[in-house]
Length: 171
Image (cartoon, rainbow, N blue to C red; front, side, top):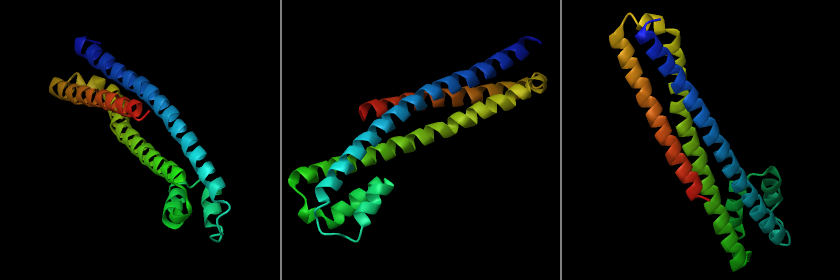
């Protein structure tokens, strides 16, 4: 191996390992945060379900959504059909639950959008690692690939920082 071989090999393998490790930490923190959202949403839905169990039956629709765990449909049904029969305190719980559901969905979506470029960059690192011997014969392609993959890695790391900021802000 010459100097370019070593540079390419170690750079591509380091980028892949760094992104995989950072992605693992970020996803672990996001999973914990989403779990906290789920716990709070479950508590709110349980409180609302218990409070509305005395309201005349809707044909089991409320019970069905509650036991299936379909929180968005459950909260929407309460807001649409039971709004006149709930107290101001229950309405506040419902508003808080709907807002919490919206924030959880936004965080989940942002996590997915941070995941896509990370997986693509890691995949490109593996492809580049497999072609290091060819790339050393084409230095122009090697430097272009190195620049693109490094740029992708920097983008991913910035996406992780934004995602962590968002997750901590939602706390």
